[in-house]
Structures are given as structure tokens and as C-alpha cells.
Image 1 (cartoon, rainbow, N blue to C red):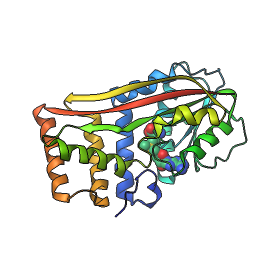
Image 2: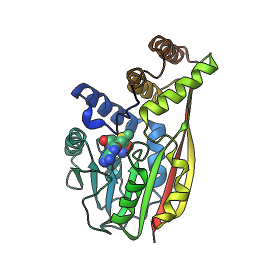
Image 3: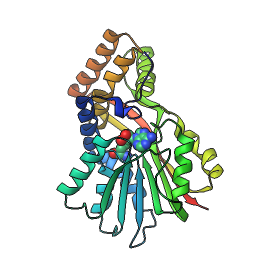
Image 4: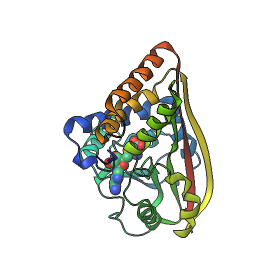
Length: 273
Ligand SMILES: C[S@@+](CC[C@H](N)C(=O)[O-])C[C@H]1O[C@@H](n2cnc3c(N)ncnc32)[C@H](O)[C@@H]1O
């Protein structure tokens, strides 16, 4: 069976799988290491007092809730996602935090955004671009709906760098590759952005990389394997029994304090010319 990125094909998942993805998105947002990567670019965003912010592929809205909690954000933000289940969850989470007057969520496709040109001051894609069907089309839509002089942010992992330690290095490498291809439609897309952005009228203003590394114990990468190893199994990329052995080894390593996993993440800030 071929790989099917669960976030790309989210509308084909059953209720239980959707709930697992919701739990993963929410736990990831609370992970200190991961939350710091969001804060690191948010402080650099030019946000006027009445800023209009769009997040494409907002999932459960965890990033926009983080934004709304900031004292220096007094504007309004809108989240768009293709999955109505996620959008419903996003609205409920925002209501529960009493911030729904500043956050709105709606269903939509990042490949054809339902907004006129130049509607937003800032447009964010936070771990979206690795999942979409046509990354260049999504970037072009982001460039269209941001105002001239406004900012586009693309944050995502470079999943060719995703790695978990495993005593058999050969199988460990196969498992790294299988995890990346079962989970991400575009595992290497972040390497293409310096070339793609200028073609869309987006001038790169800043870009940097961060390594997310867990040694000894796992939290971010623990929830990653528990969520996504079933998709490696479903795709039949590697023998199920060998994948089980690998997963048990990761669980054991976390218990023993001998765990190691890492992945590079990149942030691009670009100005609409
Ligand atoms: C890994 S999640 C990230 C969610 C959120 N940005 C966060 O960081 O918590 C990727 C999201 O992209 C959404 N997505 C994927 N393809 C999409 C598309 N073509 N249009 C809109 N949303 C899409 C998925 O439904 C999913 O919610």
C-alpha cells in the first residue's frame, strides 16, 4: 500500500484517528521545546495594534491561542483548516479560554483561499507545508492574501533529518526514512524555499534553523512515534514485526534513560514585495 500522509488525507480518517491527531497537536503545542520555536518567530513579527493574522492549516488552533495569549498581540486572527473536525475543536478550545472574540476558525483549502488579495498583515503556515498536495500553490495563495509589505512565515521540519537511535544502524535508517515518508507528503520541502519564495514575490527577510533533540528522555518524539508508527505499519513500508521491535526499543530506551532522537526545524520570514 502507498504512503498516505494522515494530515493531507485527514478527511478520510475515522473519528478515533482524528481524536489521536487532536491529542498529538495539543500535546505538541504544550511541549516546552516546541513552544519556544513558535515564540522565537512571533517576537519578530511586525504586528500593528489592529493586526490581521491568518494561519493556514491551523489544526486545533493551538498556535493562534498562543498568539492570542500574548500581551503584545491586540489584533484579530483567523485560522483555516481543511478538516471540519479540527475547526470545531479549535473553536471549542478558544471558547474555553475566553479568547474566541479575537480568534475565528473556518474550514477551507490552503490551495485556494477564500479571501480577496492583500487581506492580512501576517500569514503563517506552521507545520503545514510538509503536508499539502501542492506546496508551491499554497505558497502562492499565502503571497496573494498577504498585503504588500506584510509578512509570510513558513515554519516546518526538515524530515530528511528526522532520526531515532537504534542499535542496528541499517534498520534504524530505514525506519527514519519510513517514518518521514509515511507522515509527510513533502519531507524535504523546507530546502526548496530560498528558490520558491522570490518566484512568488516574497522577499526573504530572515531564516534560521533549530535542532530539536531529546537525549535520555523523550517527550516530543515519544508522542511522535506513538502517533505515526501506525501509519508506517498501514503503508506496509517495513515488516510489521521488525517495526514492533523498533518501537519497543524506543519505549524501553525512554524508560531506561538511553533514548536519542532529533530533527531539524526551519523558520522563514518573507516580506510581500
Ligand atoms: C501538523 S498539522 C498543524 C496544525 C497547526 N498548524 C499546529 O501547528 O498545531 C497540519 C494541518 O494542516 C492541515 N492541512 C493539510 N492540508 C491542508 C490543506 N490543503 N488546506 C488546509 N489545511 C490543510 C491538516 O488538516 C492539519 O490540521
